[in-house]
Amino acid sequence: LWLLVSIIQNSTASTASCASSFILASLLNPTDQQRAYVLTTVSHLLRKDNPLSSTPFILGMLDPVLLKPWQYLSSWFQNLDHPTAFSAAHGESMWDYAGHEPRVNHFFNDAMASDGLLAASVVLSKCKGVFEGLKSVVDVGGGTGIITKIFAKAFPQTEFTVFDLPHWILHDQDCIKILERCKEEIGKKENGGKIVIMEMKIENQELDEHQSTETKLSFDMGMMVCLGGQERSEQQWSKLFAHA
Image (cartoon, rainbow, N blue to C red):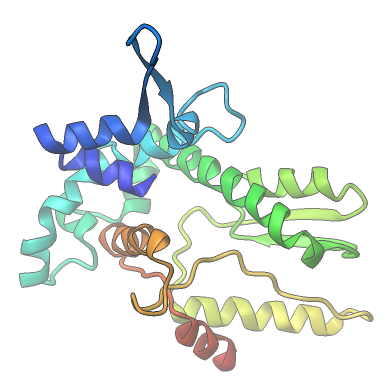
């Protein structure tokens, strides 16, 4: 999906053709030589009637408010008066901007919920056992609670709580504090507990899977441009856990 965003952002005659083949497959009937077109696996994710539709995410990432900061990268690198490229473009943080622009707040929440739906479906498919047997789960940074709803449906016997702050940015110091508090609360429980983190990890190209490298790096760039954050490598995650 980030590849599709990149193609559209940099569309030319050749990239437009690439985008077309990315979302449409051409089939030639050998009998009557008639050509037909069908949706690809990726374009099915753009259908509004698809329960896992990523349309809100794509529309959000292509909104002019989020595209404008990318045009300020060069000047931002040369003059770091602003903490992020977003603030260089708009004069304030993304959270402050969304605070007085309901449209931006709405499309961002919808985009994160859309992305969360897809992520939750994968986690339930591949890692369902991690959540089995838990009596209660607190979704820290759960946004509008869309992921929690998916898990609550899959585990009706478990009590779920959504905990979030609209302006939270997970820099290392913030993450350490959150992990320390989670560790503290888990230690109070008779049967203990676990901390489950749904995140990607960045590795160098020699260690990473080629198919996912571009997507991960795109997310990493997006975090930097809009929030001044980053995606973490396995080593960085290990360091974070050790400090907590």
